[in-house]
Image (cartoon, rainbow, N blue to C red; front, side, top):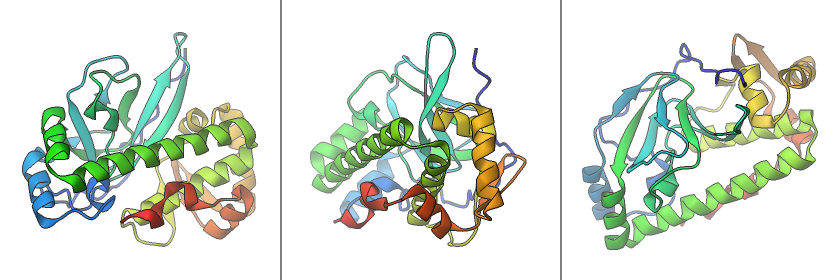
Length: 255
């Protein structure tokens, strides 16, 4: 059996957002919504709900009727094999919709779990479908988010199949930095709540191989790690090692 999914309950995240505030979420920033569309979206979502590290937001194969929008904290999507092995298929940051496919599908084929303490908004499938049918801007945002998720999955598949451990890890860190800064995080040393075992589940490596790759990145002064938290020191150095090009995230294509 695989080890329990690691969490970082002591990792500090910002939870200052106002209840039902969707302004900083990807659903809004993914497209140019009118004031009317933003207002309709604000009215449709639930109030902010606080969730603890380790909380399950959805389980593999179970029905779900709400789209969960992460307001603060870190979460993940994961898939499990019958013998208990696990692969993380996405890391979710503040602003992300955790389960976008619930817009159309009754069941998810993956699990959702909080990695840190955080907070979420809920948007029911029925309301989401009504909004998409009534407001073109919201429909475009849903579509764009789905396409960007698909592009990111292609990149992760390439990394899993064709990159060695050190460049794969460097590329992964670069992606997280870009996404954090897109979401409004301050530039500077970024702290990531990622321990060795969790990184192994992302990279498809053993914890020992992750430790060796991390040792090399630390030796080059690119990262610092301490008690399940990784601090990014030199993003440019990581970009060179990982041959990182953020074009697949389509950050400049918002219109």
